[in-house]
Length: 345
Image (cartoon, rainbow, N blue to C red; front, side, top):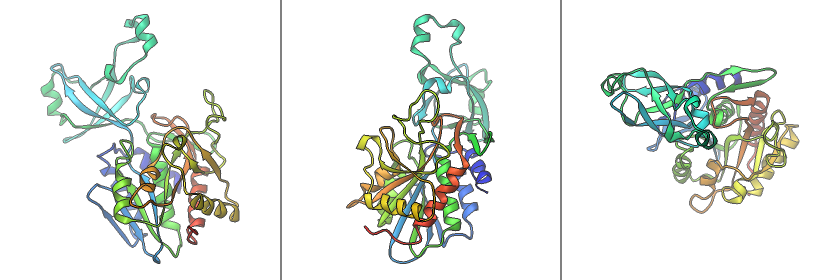
């Protein structure tokens, strides 16, 4: 079931450049379901289902936003850099896991207590540079003995759990939801086309894995699977994010106000026709926020017609992201339906 699959992926840990534990989950899930699976020089995992000469690339990034150790002081406190787009107050007082050479080590992110902040400090809010990790050590030597040093990756210590109805919450739904959609599609799809299921690395720090894998594969068209921000909860209005949870997957027309992806109208039409023919709920999005692997893919070589199929996810880039599993199932059904025939490009 997709719920159990997403739980495995969400609970796995893999910041940008350290996606290995996610790779292990994906390989196990896809064993026996694809014709070939391999890792490239960048670390992208490429699963191939062989078909005719028309090649479709489906891309889902494996990495999650996280942290990396940059300095350990004499008292054993650890300073870090953010890998990906963190909002400072989200990290304040979180429990984290440091993935050192001796295995996982639990720590907490500390900072100046609010009781000791003056009015100006409270108004400015907590910044990443103000924070540090406390693993309980009393000096630098103890931290190093635990297997932690400069360059150790760090993730938030949070596990997947169910909410009411078909909603679930966990860390790294951006983009383990897209990874789950791609895995389930590869397992179930029946298509005459050649399908490259590419689980990309380092999306959160510059769409890097998508760029290199698209260059080497040179597909005829591409779809990235990811998440997007819905406008259906307090603090945001539908006019600013006019998609909602529970109303189906989202097909991108434009993201980042056109600075990222202006999707291929023919690929968008291919997906929309498949949704209409199979009674699959779908939403279209013209967004002003972030972008996805599709931005890097569509600019590769002479240009690759591309779009994104996203799952609405509340509270992204936090440890408590929320999605509706019905949207995820509908996303799988949309991809399976579209891949029954090639698009007219």
